Amino acid sequence: MRALAAGFTLILVSGCTMVREERGITLTAPEQTASSALTSHEVLNTLGPPIQIGALDSGYAFLYEHTVINERQLGLSVNTPLLRYFKFAIGSAEAERQVLILLFDHDGRLTQSGYREWTEDLGRGNSIQFIIAVMSVVDTGDLTESPASLTWGGGLLKSRLPESLNSSNSPLTGLSGVELRGTPTGAGQRTLEADTFPVIDLLSY
Amino acid sequence: MTVFLILSGCANFTTVQGVSSPFEGDGAIAWERGVTTKTAVLEALGPPSQIIALHEGTVLYYLRERGAGSAKIFILYNTGNLEVEYDRAVFFFDSEGILTEYSYSKEKPAD
Image (spheres, chains in turn blue, purple):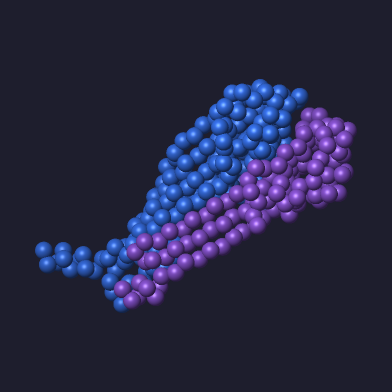
């Protein structure tokens, strides 16, 4: 019992941390827009420009996305002279996501649409941090990248050969559809860019 | 307790990435569908973030990413917050380079 009490006094709960990140376009009445809009003109008037535009064989697509990431952390520290200035942070995160996709024909008439909102578990993580640090311990990088439009020119000149060779099929260029944040490259039209082909990867060096 | 008070603090930061073209609220130029040319838009706004080739025409897409973050550190309770908004302007042109459609984002740009 005495050992247990000593353990409790040695390990201190050093605090909890909340990390929140919000990105994207706040969607107002997306379901009504998806069901009632007839043309790209009406959609642009109602929702403004999308976050991604992609050409399709049958026309073009608009993608609207809104993501809110909430991460909760618990910090533990050990009450010894040096270690009390560090904490062991354990965290978990989830994302509230809204996605609206609209497909138009070559004349700008809406042909198909889809809207979904959901909460996604982003997993757990832990790290050792300085006790006054506020930083994420869960890898949310695939949901927090800047839109490809900001790096469009450079996106056509990727240093990795598989990505350059596949640029005409990549939805990030706007020439071949659109892509949701967080989509892995191991499947779909970016399969050839995946890191699972070490022989091809060697050719890029 | 004294250590907690000394180590407490807060931080704020902002980030901006993308083109600096005028977006709605910055004094956006009035364009005329069926009249304005692609050349006129490019001369007024400069190079876009992205050019998209459609079956019959071109899209010029202007994007500016604005992030505003803050952190509050009280040792026992800490928060971090980051909000990223996107100013957007999009222009559709036909195969002759004449403006057919355009739109600006609705969000309020940064001061």
